[in-house]
Image 1: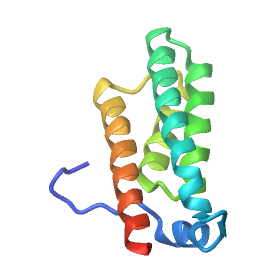
Image 2: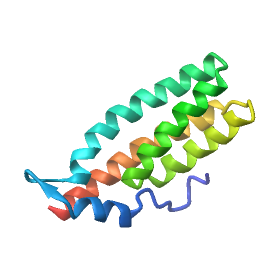
Image 3: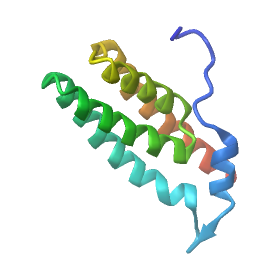
Length: 122
């Protein structure tokens, strides 16, 4: 992706729906963010391991899990990159190091944007 273009990181429709459900002082979005942070870190690490092991099936499965988690929270780029990784794995190919770095960067950008969205709603 072109680093100069403005990208939408969060699907605010999805995030707003999750923010509308509050329990024990926290919205569903706020409760899910720390879970996503941990899970995404673990899954990105597993994706890296699957690439290093030339494990296309493991790569596909792990990218699918990350795509699902990203979809639940509205993490647009994470979902898109995860889908690309899945597509590559299904062909028996492996994403480049740059793709993996872009995935890691998109997770961090989503988390930062999500915290800003939460802060604006408080």
